Image (cartoon, rainbow, N blue to C red; front, side, top):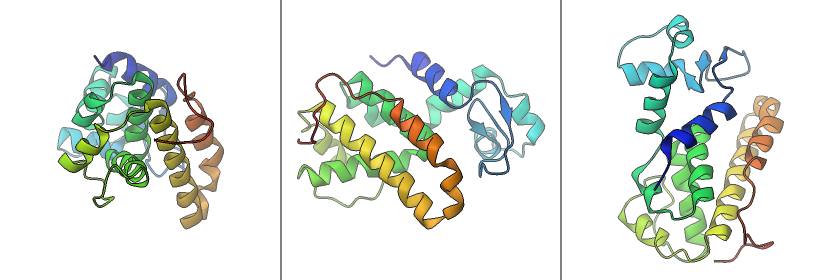
Length: 185
């Protein structure tokens, strides 16, 4: 069973804790608990200001994380390390990007023949159920995430300022016990 509160607590720490930030280099703008002004606006379905972000409570931030960044299909993953990495990927890159990362690995492992589109439907879920080596899957998705960061820097050189932080965040996820040196399904 997934301990949502523990996972959310750890992602909030990686997102800077309860510090309010508004860095010019951060495309998210005003942020607290990792929740941006745009995310808070979407959640509340009403206009919000930087002040509203500053006043955001941990309780509301936790509700946003649970509702917006835990796709139902994560419950099908038996490996806790993978669930934590994948949840963090949803927060850091978006639920659709995590789905693309997972679909790409499943495709290259010949478990999935569908489109890599970020919509994790029945075909993707069926392929996920065929994964036998969860440490290898964890590692392969972690590599897809790093590749995404590199593509973002390549397409928008201004993102290079984030490279070290992104790499450090990715490296916080230790390979689970039994992870291979080379990735195989």
